[in-house]
Length: 281
Image 1: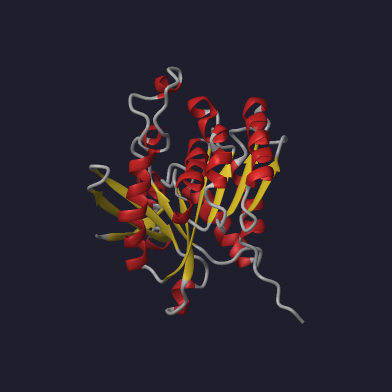
Image 2 (image 1 turned 60 degrees about the horizontal axis):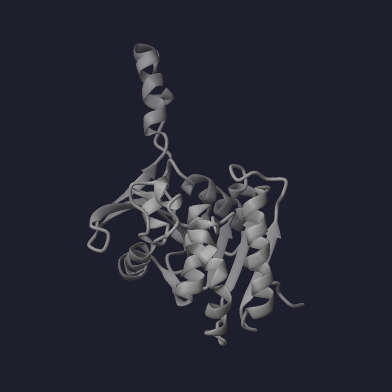
């Protein structure tokens, strides 16, 4: 595995250099802005190379010994949601409203393949040439990515996952099908309509089958009425069937659209589930 710094400014200053060419001095040239690491994994499970972006929280590099939990995120490319979630982690850790987490973003190749389960709904199948690969993507996380992260970074055993829309669907699916993979699950406007709402329809039975489940689930809905109604039903099922040691919270954000909800919802979620423990006087 070869790691490279994540560089944001390299492409931004090149046009300015060409424009001002002879007039620019060495002091005026911009320097690359490095915020973390990026590396690739040649995945045998997925049969392709996947790019991974990593943001260490404030204080991690300076410490040299500190170990931190890991927050995984699908849609984790630089042109996707990685940068704004990294910004939330940076600000929230800095102002003391969130515990430090190592942020690990998984860049997409075939998003709708990886984040969906097989479906019998013909309309669902029209969203992409290939769907239904969530089980393989979960194996990639469990058997290839997570061991690599633990081997390369100073981490604790605690792990969380955050995702929005189809990535939120994957978060809820993993919570219900393989809850041991993460400790905390954050699903923002998850697409629970997928496959005729099968995840919601089978949730009660899956929860009953794990009476000792001790995990956290935080999910959020936007103004999208149909999906909000599905999530309200999911919340009612959780209220009646969730094991006593499982913590869950449903946040309604009707002031947000599906296209605007990720940033404010993630901020609320991080403050709620990753809050810094209060020191008793």
